[in-house]
Image 1: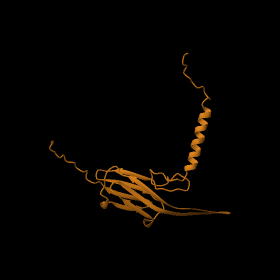
Image 2: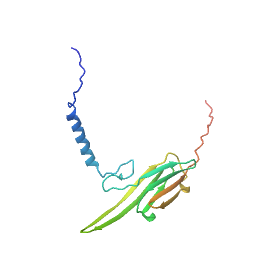
Image 3: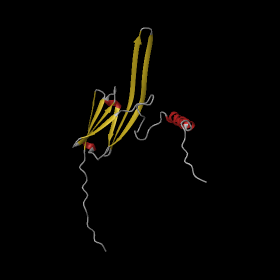
Image 4: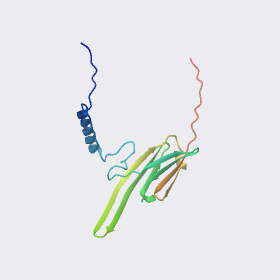
Length: 157
């Protein structure tokens, strides 16, 4: 008896693809709105959720982290800096109103967020600086000197 390689024809795999799409859709709906561990909070593109979009740049002497926090005031933000990560927490409260001819429209969004950003190297947390201007939070994070490991010679017995 000889083995014959199965080559599916166009359309034969359609039921399998449809099943996978349906399972993906069910999982997406079930987990919509749940916190994502890699962001420390909800992703901004999820309906009704907010988490600041961040950029992390490296210079020779420091890391510069910028976070978009439109409409927020400095007293609404809590920034915690550790040697190897930055945590940005806040509570967003926004109201928009539009009045046109014969209708009235009001949109509000409230809620707290948290964003944890791991850093690629250790920093001097006590020398970090933060500034909020025009809805952009900028953190200047000076790099720590790399620890120099020294070799210790031990006697073999």
